Length: 356
Image (cartoon, rainbow, N blue to C red; front, side, top):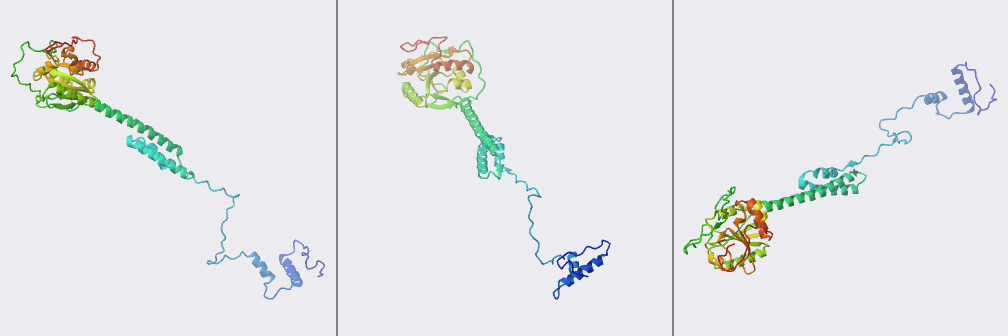
């Protein structure tokens, strides 16, 4: 066979029907003539089988595995991590529903949640919810404070105080006195000099409170009534109170009706910031005559002038039954200088024993 194609030329075209063995023999023949194989090199058949045969798997101990590289054009990137809702923000809204302490806790939780979200905005969410909880906490704290303050004020103003032990009577619904004799007149004959003070007069001057009302009972052992009244007026001025003198006696059912009504809320409101000084007309009749304070009709109520004489006065005849709803409007207007329409006008006259 001639070498017309040369060693670098491709194999001659052969008939497609020529057997594969003939083609292999022809290729081997050409390579054998053109290229001299080195010693120990595999034959052409062995190289062909090695190329066709798949490579054997690497051994167990060999570390020939390459790292996996993700192709961004073939697969979608993983979704971004979702921010978590702040637990403190939820707690601030929930805590606001649990009374005064919950409202304060809502302020603390809301403030802490806002700080937490500001420091890590990519991890936490719920800033608006924390702001709502903080605002609710502030608003409810103000509401609860106002409600508690109003409740304390109402309880202090309208609650009944301690009961006077001098009277020794349990509190009960006041029984109406007779409307025919609202004020008990003194008899024309003066009482004997040896008359003893009634059971309602203490030995020493006592000062107690019934609710918000100061009650002073002048004791038997005082030297003069005018000195004691001056002392009581000075103490009342330091406490912001106004002195109202009440003349009383024992027995005196209208007087006891006034005593029973003092703890009523109507009387507590009418006599707010008032110091009621009770004087027994049998024990201090000379002192009452000296300061020109009438004692014929009782119970009497008097406002003092600077010289301790009565500046204005009324008695129990200004109302009907001795109950709180009748007494409170009269005494409340009287101590404030607003009681103008009266059943018995006040006429201050010199001397003792002057009628009202």
